Amino acid sequence: MEKEEIRQYGLSIGADVVGFAAASDYKSERTQPLDTYLPGVKSIVVLGYRGNRGALESASHRIALTSRMGEIELGNNNSYRMARFIEKGTKTKAAPVPVSYPLDMAPPVMGMAGDVSLRHAAVAAGLGAFGRNNLVLNPEFGSQIVFAGILTQLPFASDPPVTDNPCTDCGLCVENCPAGALEREGYTDTLKCLKTSQPYGFIGTLKYFSKFVGASPDEQKALLRDPALLSIYQAQFIGFQYHCFSCIASCPVGSGE
Ligand code: B12
Ligand code: SF4
Ligand code: SF4
Image 1 (cartoon, rainbow, N blue to C red):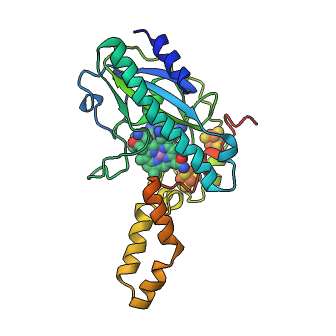
Image 2 (cartoon, rainbow, N blue to C red):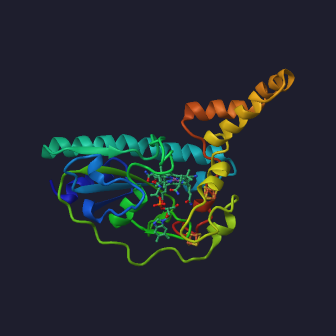
Image 3 (spheres, rainbow, N blue to C red):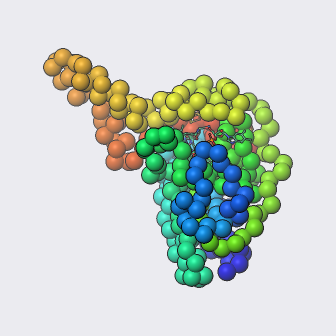
């Protein structure tokens, strides 16, 4: 099976960009070697899905989140389909990587790294370069793009890297981050980002229940009527709940402006 057959299949099922990385070119210090997940792995097929600009710029985080959930669902669904396509067509093994969740929640990772870093995979597959917002900027879509990956045993060489970084270093992402999580270049303060972007995620849930445990019976009754509990409940069945997309939305690259 040739690269082009896989690329065309990826585009036909809804990916906006498709790239290839040789497993030896995947370099991410904080994640495990790729053969931990697929023995005999030789390459990663990386697919990118652009978000809806209107959703991203919406004043409602629920609208923005709906686009993100679509990207994640389409991404996971298509990675499964792509792995089937490769396995059927080549009699080799292929394994889809989660677009977002599930994550390893045991120490030392504790949900702070994926099994495969899809940003590093996207860079190795020639789909973009790291910008000042620590996201990977695709030359066409900027950082308004979510990545998915499929580990394969096919010996593909990497696609040519993006050598002209689309990031202009304008600093808008840093200025517009409400958490101040991007102040230090090349580093995202993950705790600051998490508290702002997922206020009803794990940290918010822990805060709510810690308050509940220490409260008087009357305070507990009031806490049970707190809208925060409903938001926590909603986040559980959605799977997560992003309230902030500023480091993507504020970036002019790929915005069409
Ligand atoms: C865990 C996670 C988070 C955590 C921790 C983030 C982190 N520091 O890694 C939290 C919850 C904070 C988070 C936040 C966000 N995330 Co997130 N997240 C992930 C996840 C699941 C794993 C990331 C991972 O493995 N990190 C650990 C290792 C790889 O990071 P690291 O080696 O320390 O690298 C960091 C720095 O060192 C730096 N870096 C590393 N190498 C280099 C090289 C250069 C040149 C530079 C400048 C920087 C740099 O970049 C990283 C940023 O902290 C990935 C999906 C996946 N499986 O890859 C999505 C992912 C990274 N997230 C994504 C997005 C979009 C977001 C948010 C915008 C949330 C939102 N509202 O959508 C914010 C952005 C925060 C930001 N600007 O950095 C996208 C990024 C897409 C893109 N175009 O780059 C991903 C790839 C999901 C996807 N499938 O597309 N995320
Ligand atoms: S907002 Fe400006 S500095 Fe930030 S990633 Fe985009 S181009 Fe780079
Ligand atoms: S998602 Fe929001 S809080 Fe997190 S780094 Fe981006 S702008 Fe900052």
